[in-house]
Image (cartoon, rainbow, N blue to C red; front, side, top):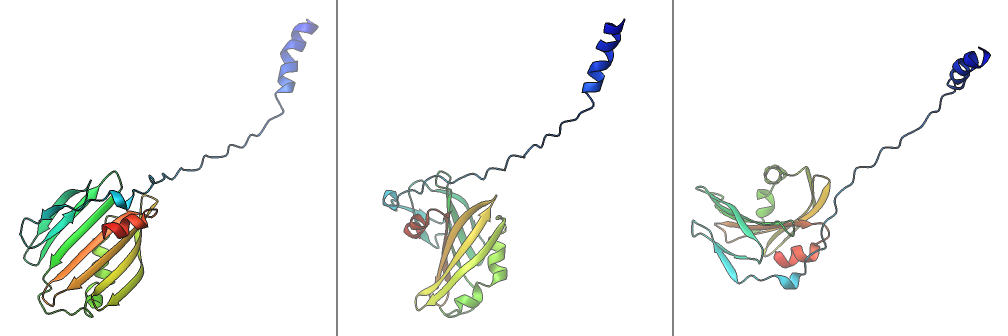
Amino acid sequence: AVVLIGCTFIPLIGRSSTTTQTVVPTATAIPTFPPPPSASELDFSTLYLHPTNIFAIGQPTGFEQASPTSNVNLAQVNMVNNSTLSVIDAFVQDPQESVTTEGLTGFFTADVLDRTWDFFSTWTESSRTADATGLTIDFAVTLQQQQYAARQRAWTDGTWIYSVRVLTPSNATDYLRALL
């Protein structure tokens, strides 16, 4: 009887001590970009002619046209290379008034640029340089916790505004310059 009662109550006494264990959550992994492609691999021998016949642009190797658009004042094409995570956006626009090279800065306001980056999480303008040939704007862009670099080059002939913007992963700035 003593053994039976002891076997019943001794395990209950041992259970009264509690052990606290802290579990550290695993940090969310941020995906990394592939190594930047070599600019020497680019070939611009294929020309893309916009359906409006207003402009043509060299189509680099590996880039596919996506969503050419046009309206009364704008002809635009986007080219995408999914393997290099890069985008080229080119357009020709009629601003409905004469525009000078100096006037390009006033044309590309924060509101205008904000509408063009609406697909991305955040964007900031990192530099803006105007010279006699046109306007260059550099951007830092974020999409799904990944950092991208972009550069937009715009120029005018007095009647039309021409613009090419290239977006690449932030580790591929030499590739960005070669594409532009």
